[in-house]
Length: 356
Image (cartoon, rainbow, N blue to C red; front, top):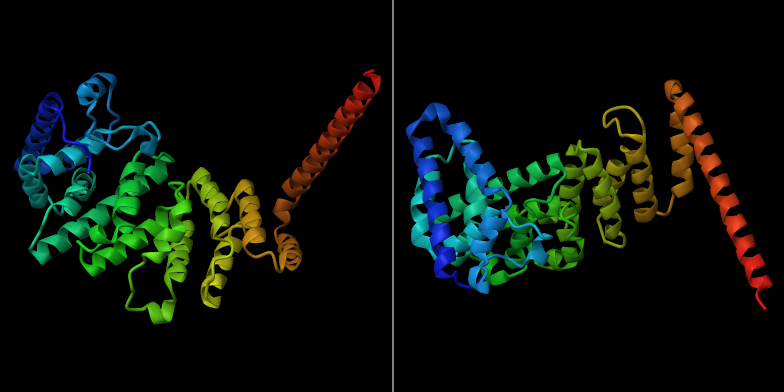
């Protein structure tokens, strides 16, 4: 848990909490403006902390937020407010009650997941129905904000993901505070976004903590469930830089023991990204990245796949000119690089021979 805030910091965050409460009250009072007001509030709490506010929050050198290294030097208002509502839950209760009234509205779950993701695991809730509702809202809201990151190709909400992974999923004491169904939903969520947030080094630990699934006998173990969710995620991605990032990170799965059906599912997903045209319509960069991932994860059968791909390329004659052009340019670049390498190596040999 983060250190307690100083009096100056607490006063500043209390004022922020009051402003949030006022905006939520306006949203409850004016149905026609609810969506816009909630969207504005979500944007406000997702903003990075400006220099003036940072000085106030850091006053007395007693920060109440995660270390800046953990969030890649990005500190947002939701980071400090989430810790504040853990230390001052009474100040968060009015906001929570208003969010519950707006439960069915867009951005309500977004706001809840940002402001109360730590509070949910620190307070004691005896009502199982309420706990399940809050847990479901957390997973749904986190899913929505992570997709916002993907669409913009940013990591603004990485601290939220990192907390759910490292402080909840990998800490059994906290994980057991939410119902079993919410635990399963949380791990499925983490499986879809762990590559995006560059935390694949935590994958082995996460797989060891995977909860039991009722359908585990049919779909396989933790690794199979993880790969199934990951392949579904990759097929939904439309942002090229994000898709390229997934394909580069997925190589870390090499050596993972999978069922035959799961392995075939992953291979089919990657293979669908290696050919031009529908249904994925991948770009040239994506096709090459998918081939690289296939070669790393499934080295057996590399050359037969290449021949099959070449055969199917013949079925798309409208791609021949661009393919020939790219092939010629690649050959020219390879020859040019080889000539430069030869020149530099000869130059080094001549330079060394001239030395006494």
